Amino acid sequence: MKLSLLLVATLLLGSSAQGFEQVAYEHLRSTYKNCGVLGPSEHCFPKDEVLVAIEAEGLTERLPGVRFFKSKLTTPYFEYPVVSVLVATAKRDDVYSSTVCFSPMYEDVPQSFLALFVGLHGDDKTARRDLAEAVAKLLAEITPQGRAESGRASATSAVAHVYSGERIWRSVQVDYDTDGVVQGVKVINPKADT
Image (spheres, rainbow, N blue to C red):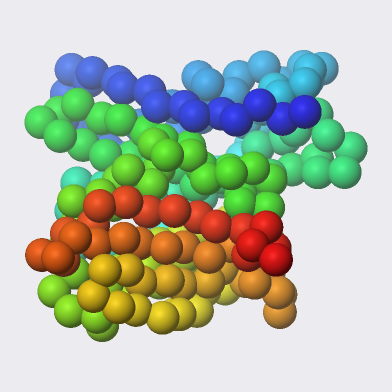
């Protein structure tokens, strides 16, 4: 059984010249360094693996201190030897923190990742729908044959879908209070609701 890996590492850096990408890379390198024989729930960040910056349309201006990257880890599982991951690296005052999110096809999206969006604001239904779609687009980046599509929006919630090929794999639900402030984000398996 896979264990949920909620990994948040905070690195205090002596120089603010170090960039988001370097922090994300070092986080993966230090957290997933066991590249020998992998035991259950162990993962490896191969030496030749790279990080790819993700242009987070709709999030860059809302989260100016956060950058998103994707990469791959090797796994101990024959049926899933490589998994795509998303690394969200945030900076507040020279303190960096990174959160790793595995492909939603591999395991549940960690709350540490979803918490990045709590407190953001959506002025109207369109802005609320756009935020849900932006989060879904991030998850689509690490989903095989992934794409995102907007769903419904109301005064208190918005939904977008993450597809793998032609199948809805997950739905992203963003819940708002009456002032339009994000109160929570959930990633739902639509098959579980049937």
